[in-house]
Image (cartoon, rainbow, N blue to C red):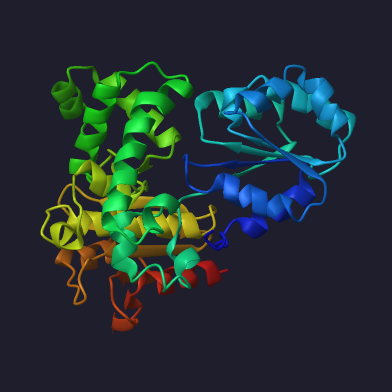
Length: 392
C-alpha cells in the first residue's frame, strides 16, 4: 500500500469544516479526492462515507432525509455527488434544522448541474475547495519514487500516472483515462456530445496548447459552429481538463490581443493526446516549450492563493508576457523557458516597461535562482511559488 502524500488543501479542508456546515472538494476524476477525504474523516471521530457510483450506497439514499437524519451526529462524506444533485435540497433542510459546522463533506468531479444545484440550495452554508492532480510542492519529498521535475512534466500529476515507476504503465493509464472521460464521464456529467468530436477538439487543443484560441478555425476543422466550439471548450474547462487564461485588461494606449489562451491542464494528459511517451520524444517535439509553460502555469496557479488575478499580456506588435499576476498593489510578471540557460526577447523587456512591472521571474529548470537585472530573476519553479505565497 502506497504511503499517503499530504495535499496542500488538507489544512484548508479541516479549517473549512470548522467554519461551515458543508465543504465541497471539487476536481477532476482520479485526482485523489476520495483518498484525501478518507484521511480527513479519520480525524473527525464518527463518520460515514458514501460513494454514489456504487448502487448499494445509492440505495441507502432512497429516502435521503431518513438516512442522513439517522446519522446526524457523524461527518457524512458524499462522493461523486453529481450523480444525485437533488440531494442538495435535502442537505439545505437538514443544515437549517441544525446549523452545526462540519456536518457534510461533499466530493464532486465537477459539472454545471453540481455547481448550479449546490450554489442555489446551499448558499452561505458551503465552502468550495479545488483539488488538482499532484503539484510540485506536494511531491518534493518523494525522491524515491519521482526522479526529477522532468518526470512530473512528462507524466503529469494524476496519482495513477506519476506514482508508478514504469513509463509504459503511466502512458496506458492516461490513454484509458482519456477514453473513459470521453465515452463515459461526459455523458454522466449530463452533456450529450459525440466522443469522436470531443476527442478531435481535445487533440486539436493539445496541438495548439498555450496559443490564443481561434474558435473559427477550430469550428471549420470540426464542421461545427463557433458557438458550439466555445461551449465544448467551456465543458472541458468546467471538468478541469483545460485552463482558459484570459488576456490582460487595462486602459493602455496599446492594441491588446483579446482572445484567451487555452492550456491542457495536466501535462501528462497533454502528452498522451500527442502520443509523446518519453522525455527524449518531448524534447524533440515542437510542443516542448509550451508544455513547460503550461506545466509551470498550472503548478503556480494551483499552489497560490486564488486572490491573485491571472492573465497574459500580448500586444498586436508582439510584445508579450506569459503570465501576469495581480493582487492588491502587486503586479508580477512571469516568463517560462524550458532551458537551463534561458534567453528572453526584446519584447519581454518592453512589456515590463509598458506594464510598470516591479518584480519579474523567468521560470526555468535551473537548480538555484540568480538575478539578471534589478528585480528580474531566473528562478526554479518551487522558489517562485514560495515567493508568491510569502508575499503579503
